[in-house]
Image (cartoon, helix red, strand yellow):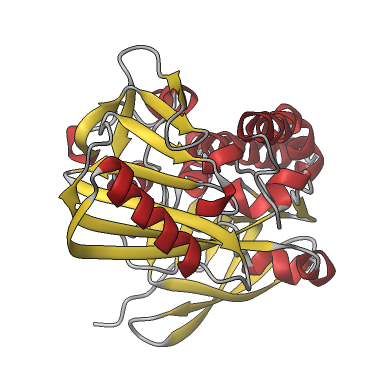
Amino acid sequence: MEIIHKTNYDVVIAGAGPSGAAAARGLANEGLEVLVLEKKKLPRYKICSGIIFKKSQDITEKYFGKIPSSVYVKPEFLKGVRLWSDIEHFTDWPFSNGGAPNVWRSEYDYWLIKNAGAEVRDCWSLRGFKDSGNYITLECHEVSSNETVNITSKYLISAEGSLSLIRAKLDPEFEKNLKWFIAYQNYYEGDSDLDPYFYHGFLELQYGEVYAWFSVKDGLQIFGTAVKKGFQLYPYLSKYTEMLEERFGLKLKKLVKKSACMGNDMCSTGRFFLGKGNVLLVGEAAGFLNAFGEGISCALSTGLFAAEAISKGIKSGDDALALYTELTKQERKQTRASWKLGAKIAGRDLMPT
């Protein structure tokens, strides 16, 4: 039987991560018809610490409810972040209120989007769009049927992450000037002497040009590093792995998984791209990512801000982008401040792109 899809919405959101889910939740709460397009099969994994910081906890519980036990990993709560200035000296940044939830992003993100109150289509990609001013026409591709479907909406939200097709189409010149880094992460069965109740960051430049990290989830030894695009990652990762083995007794058994992603310097330089016309960008697509890669809190915040701006714009006729720009003023300030603090802690530029 042929499935007939609805093709007209108030808002279409590209991306089913926390920023997309928060935007969908905020818009659905205002009674708007919302479609979320996700190019990957849900649940999909994203390379991430999987730490739900206090700000993220508060937003999650307010708009989505209590995080279910199925989302947690072991250890369920982390005591804090431990930043190593070298292999002998560290500073602890403890979490309050019994610690921060330790989750798999695949399960947390999936739970969020399922409870966002919007229609969600996974394995659907956005091929292109045209903003006529009164409405936006989107060219979408459904993977299962290999079919192209045109969908119209009043507004479009990019929640695509750092690699945003929408941002690239809106301003190709802006995209050309971005500088990129590559983050890579291993997941091994094994064990080590590092405290599993802390998320560990190693700040010495020899282990990674941004920083190198280590955590434990469900017994897996998870560690990775990041380098400028175009530079060889393996020498850094090799030296880092060797150090973990010699200094912290890391014993690797079976490689379970490896993952990678790209990021850019929008966050550290303060070059945010909030949108154009009736198209708004949220989360990493807009440049919101805090120092050391914490992005869930600003993803949730900016998704909600975009929803508020669009809802007010539809009701009052005001410029949604102007409203969104004003609403994100403090979030942009906090993002810039986090990178300054991170550089101070590390004693160097954390984003040497």
